[in-house]
Image (cartoon, rainbow, N blue to C red; front, side):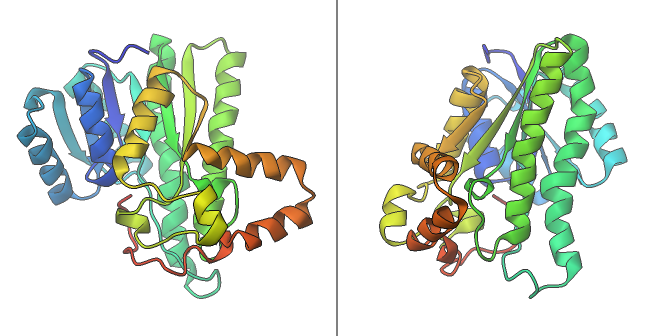
Length: 280
């Protein structure tokens, strides 16, 4: 896709991957709408991007609760009015509350499901008809490395990210069946050294095979260059995550589970020092 003059909506746009993605999109000549629940965070993001020399006329922000489907529909209309249209949707908003599955009340886990899955569906459902109407565009859903391998302390988070991958693939097939020229991609990053997953890491041989990402821009670059520009259906960072898929397909399930434990993937959240919440 030629990004110049494209109009892109990015959820979870107040920091981290959202801002890094906006920065790259603006550099490519896009107009960007950033959604987030934090008004102060959006103001900081817009100020930061303007301070870096990006044209203020190409950056819009809106405070949106993506778990509210009616509010999302209204916000989509505001975004289309501000930018003229929506060509690309980047579903980046995410929520994390790590811990043992039985250690926290249901309402805590529900927040993860509401944002990571239900919210993503709300936004997709509101934007997709417009992409279909113009028979052009793309939706990029941010999944996770935990969509390949379940991780202790991330049960519900992993479940939502597996669901995001499945949803993306199913929507792609629907578009093909209906002869729609709309593309769908999923992006699967490993732990990022900063932000939501700060401190989390796979140790030993597993850490060598599946290293942490140094910063949010690694994911932003994958979103913009691989998912959007090249139309890659599944993008993994680091690329070595392909090995996890290969091993899962080739090894008997019991042996794969044994290998994952030997690689210490299951203990990777024990060193987590980030803060629970909604910034990636």
